[in-house]
Length: 71
Image 1 (cartoon, one colour):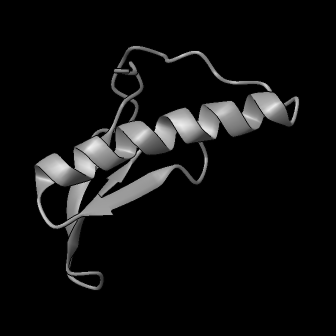
Image 2: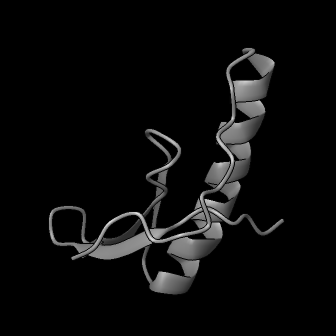
């Protein structure tokens, strides 16, 4: 399932991996050896984050649909 949250993708020298983060979902991040794997993994992480929040009765923010951070 594709989600419409902003994803920030970057290379981490510390982790020696690409990191994908979803700023609208606190703590939601994933990694991969290449960009494609990191993006595939973040989609799974977003679904897990949403499912866990719902199970715990926490609100799930709606995607803002706009760029949140400017470099």
